[in-house]
Length: 188
Image (cartoon, rainbow, N blue to C red):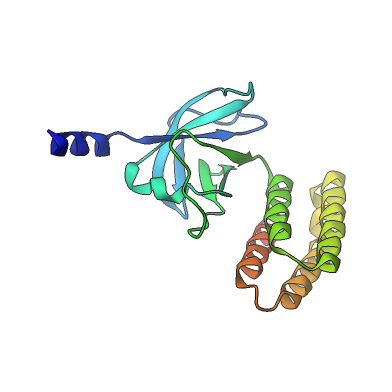
């Protein structure tokens, strides 16, 4: 009987919720991917327990270990999908039905990335520089995509300078690389 229960439980997906500020572009059956690999689909779009819009993800059980503290999901438009990002295998696994943050755009992604990086940085001077850079990027983004694209090379240079000064902190350096990669894709 126990073997039958284990087999049956492996057939049913594990559910997680993604809290987006706007779910108008999220659709049922939209694929959920991690690094190009399909790991599930959007099961439903609804109001969550906090009254905010959420996407209910149905994830194949074999991929449930990807959902860890600090991970997030972003909505991609071409092709339409929900992409799991910021998976850190050193962090604790999330329980089924846990809610993760949904990132709705490039600046949301940057701000969340900066939050993750700042938590790792111990040097107060570097933290202050990062906050200033984050504010500058956010202000430029609010001026429009063209302004951001024009300023991106300078932002990237500052990010790479910060990365170089974080010697011995490979995890934070990797997080900066992720932010730079996103910036490169958004500045084209």
